[in-house]
Length: 134
Length: 134
DNA sequence: TTATGTGCAAACCGTTTGCGAATCA
DNA sequence: TGATTCGCAAACGGTTTGCACATAA
Image 1 (cartoon, each protein chain N blue to C red):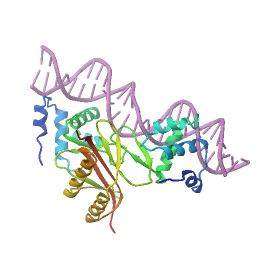
Image 2: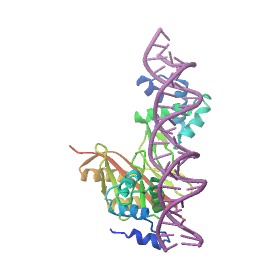
Image 3: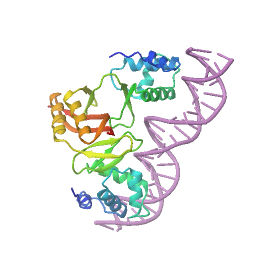
Image 4: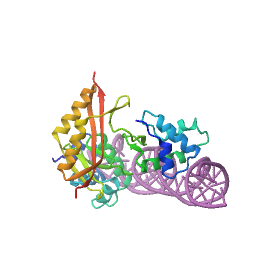
């Protein structure tokens, strides 16, 4: 699902600076779940003078705007991905590989559990930590 | 579900020092999900000379032994709880209240999803972020 | 022209760790 | 007594921030 991040930023009244464009492009092109460090490395190819501080600021802003999802896969740092299509994650604890999946049945059940407890579900987080079957 | 933490530690060949006993007692008595800071505060009542470093070390050790579960509820610090009975968590995003729940249906579904993907489920983490229904 | 955004480096803060002293077994 | 554990304080590492300069509009 494509998102025009530059347009979203302009519409939000933000200036489209070189470092910002670089970060937006990196995020649009990423099919994985890069850390800030990794986003910084990739963005350096598009704007060699970009700084970590700017990446942190941009990523925080996009997360605030609900454009980015922040993940904490039991690591000492955060990973980010575009908040386009909803899915959950399975982490292979041997290889570290992150596999995305989606289950309508699971979605419905989470919603039902929250409702049964007297709550409206706003957000949720499901991670499966597993090993490849031999 | 009661656990005799002192016995478990002795059986593991650990010395039962005063600070350790204090932390163990605090954890056994806690019905919530205290942070290290909070565990430290509570333990201070039992051993006034205990240090944060010891709480960190003890908690890390118990987590390593699979006696404690570490949580990261989108906060800047970790929370801990005894790994006695399995349940998931619903976090009230307005009040911060953490409600525990269990669903056999959900457990079975998570297992099935992992299996269908060719994995054996080792661990998982499900958090529902919700608002009280008006 | 000027509000907004940037790079730099220092600060921040939860957590970890080296060390010499204390303590349990 | 001797191995383990402790408190202290410094170090660590990912993240945030104050400031003077740069830049998009």
